[in-house]
Amino acid sequence: MNWFGLLLGVTTLFVIGLGFFWVIRGERFFGLLWWPYVIALGALVIGASLFIQSNWGSALLGVFGASLIWGASEFKEQAVRAELGWYPFQGKKIQPPFAEIIKRWHAPHL
Image (cartoon, rainbow, N blue to C red):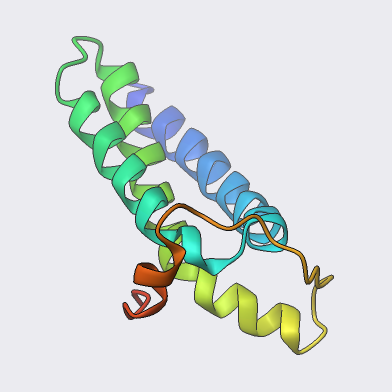
């Protein structure tokens, strides 16, 4: 029997579950303006997965990178949920470099 698919599915589910946690915490402390940096990091991680020889390593890096890209698109929605009071809201956020430029861009929505 080949257990690769089953185990990859379980670990993918775990990585996605962690994605919910880091989106909530990331938006709370950093804010939604960090989305371009998170997308870039996700793209770099996916690109790095192309150079990993191990099937496990490559697959898990690809899933993690895709989870980062998905999470970046969720920052805007999470900010709205925090403003509605569904999640704890913190007014003082850590501003990213080039925040004034990023404010003019539209945040992605998947």
